[in-house]
Every structure is written in structure tokens, then in C-alpha cells.
View 1: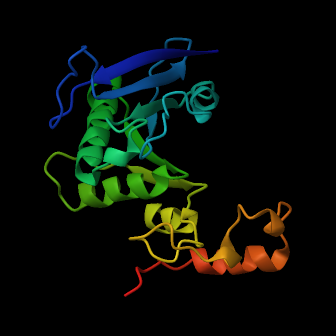
View 2 (view 1 turned 180 degrees about the vertical axis):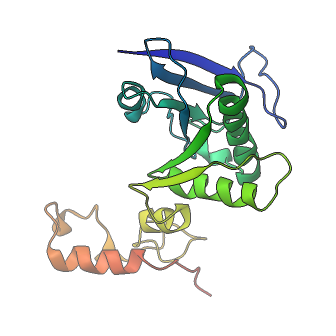
Length: 202
């Protein structure tokens, strides 16, 4: 059995929204027997809501507290700024130490949150004034980072980023003649084109 506590806070660089909402929000998962967890795990993401992360209840049942923490960019990755996101994560880390009273903070970098939490730890250990480092960092199912992932998501049939109507028909995945199902040769060529950053033609 576990219990969940809603946690919300302003950030040093963001006040409450006009309707009253706090920029930093999350859920603190802990053992339902009322014991104070000695270890607190915090996980956050660039834009995905991690408040109800799948590990929250699993860890809480084992006596480890879990803070699924969202920055101001939850669902708004288009506006993402790393410096503000790290500040918001710092709010969660401080909450674990000062309010939850844990003895050790574990930064969990899961999926796209891996590079984000690693950036937080690096900045905090480098002495950033508003950031408190974690005691441990865990990377779980990490992807290579936003630059590589977003590049891989680009449509390789677009030959000129300044003119998206200029396309290579041989790489058009929406052309019925190419699939689905897609032949292995088409997938291999499309993948190789997507692995490098497209450049506008000159």
C-alpha cells in the first residue's frame, strides 16, 4: 500500500499563473504506513508528465519515496528552455531535502529525461548557485538526447528546409508505392538519410 501527495511550488524564475496554478507540480509517492522514506527519487522530463510515473508506486511499496516532478514545460516542449527547466528541477530537489526530509536524493533520468537530469546534476556539481546536486544519478532507458532524436524524426524526403515543398519522391513514406509495408531497402535508405542533419540547398 502506498499514498500519494500532490506537491506544487513557484519557481525562482516563474510565479503562479493567472488562474493560480504553480509552474512546478508533481506527486510524492511514499509508503502508506506513514514512515518517512530515507531515500527520495525524483524524475522529470522535457515535456512529458511524470507525476504518475510507473515507478512511483512500485518504489513507494518498497519504502523508497518517489517524486514524479513536472517543470513549467509539461506539455509545452515547444517553449523549452534548459536553464529554466533546471531551476524548476532544483525546486523539486530542495523539496525532497527540506520538506520530505530524505537523507539521500536520487536523480532518475528516464527516457528523454535522462539527458535533462544529467544536465541538472552536471550543472549542480559545477556549483550553480540555485541547484543542489543529487547523491546518485540513474540513467534508465535513455535515448541519445533531443538533438539526435529530433533529427531522426525529420522527414528525409524534404530536401530543402527553407522550402518544404521541395521533396525527394524516392524517400516519401506517404507514397503508396513505398508501403506500408515498407521494403527493407527503403527503410535502410530513409534511416541513413535521417541520421544526418539535413542542410538547406544553396
